[in-house]
Image (cartoon, rainbow, N blue to C red; front, side, top):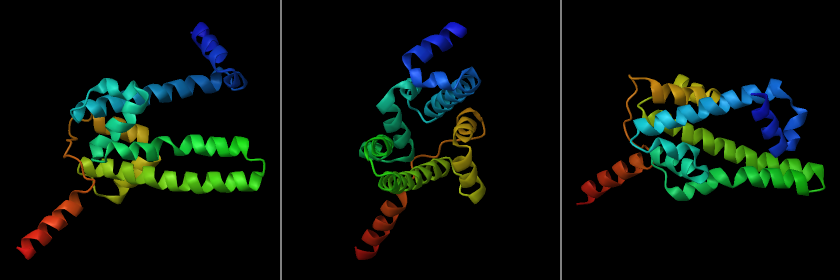
Length: 172
């Protein structure tokens, strides 16, 4: 076990300052996240191995809620932009302002995606929305492993399509 931690610290030297007391729980949370996504993808009819392929996992996750693959850019690009703004902008107020605005918009978008995930499984209560936002890894694990949870299908743009179908019926 110690050799795994040492090789990991050699690969990422900045983690040496944290020590194993932080790295072991982080590794456990990462394992829970991978297990959660794998089981969720299997339940939704997607290959579970997609959860460990870096960009494919985002595309597959968004496919569950019905979002197009182009929305994966909205998930992938903001975190590096935030980090780069904090590292390369000398004016700390400006760097924090840029990081705060981009991070806030990104966090709201991710909350919306997780709420759509709840709705894809038929959960429309505020409690479910709060749970998926606060404990999203464990909530996704619950959705993936619970036998009582059934995938209802994607919800993104479903209401818009239903409204446009109603308008077409009224105009015909």
